[in-house]
Structure formats: C-alpha cells, structure tokens
Length: 170
Image 1 (cartoon, rainbow, N blue to C red):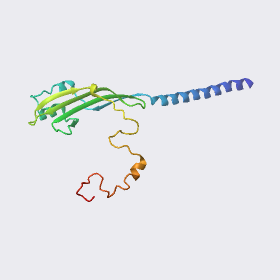
Image 2 (image 1 turned 45 degrees about the vertical axis):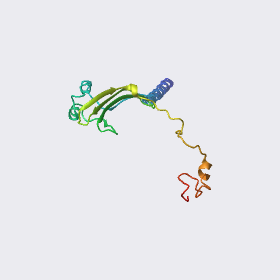
Image 3 (image 1 turned 60 degrees about the vertical axis):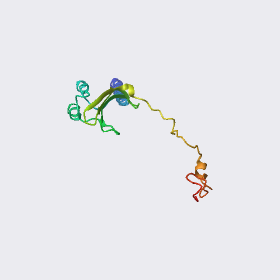
C-alpha cells in the first residue's frame, strides 16, 4: 500500500504542474496577441493602368467618372478639382499608425468639364505636425488671469477705448 501512495503523489503533482503550465501558456498568448501588427487601407482602391489612363484634353468629367468612379472627395474651394486618395498604414499594438504607402490623384477640370491637368503625388507630401505643449501660440496680448478679470475696471464709458472717436460721447 505504501508503494501505491508514493506513485499517486507524483501523478497528482504532475497533473497540477501541467495545468499551471497550460494556464501560463494561454495567458502568455492572450497578452502577446495585443502586440500584433495591424495593417489598414483607407480610401480609393483602383487599378494603376486606369489611374494613368486619364489624360488632359482627351477626357471629361463623365469619362473620368466612368473609368475611375466617383472621387474620394471634391475640392472645397473649387468643384472642378477631384481627388482620388489611397493610403496603406501599419500599426504595432498601441502606437500611432504610420503610412507605408500613399497615392493621391488630383484631376482638375476646366469650365467646360474637360480634364485640364492630372497630378499624382505620394508619401513625400506627408508632414508630421507636433503641437507645442498644451497651448496654441497666438498673437496678441499676454494677460494673466487677474488682468482678464479686473482689466476692464474703469474703462467702461471712459471714451478712450477702441472704436471711440473724438466726436462720439463714448
């Protein structure tokens, strides 16, 4: 009987160690799954031969829309500027996404609706904007909190403020 007891303990401790190691493996897999590399595509998906087929003086708005589809967006100040935009990004865990590829096709039309110019740009126009701390620098006076609150005392009705003229009472 003593021999049976000796063999039962190692089996039980072996089973506990297997459960612990399996649990540790599952936890490690769950933790490292958050560190995977994410890839994303934004914008237009088009064929390169179609994108290069748009030619100034040959195409018009209808033919461009028939071959490339609706633009990603139209110019805000000029409705005759059409943009086809595509960007591929990658991101590791919680880091900011970085662009691996970018393609912008700008098609400008004349007043008659014919293609006037076609420009293609890529990743070289991406710029990184880094704000200065928590404040945006502005032009003008630098006033303190108390100057903002008490700065107008005595200036109401004095006639020396902005907008007053020598002929006006205020």
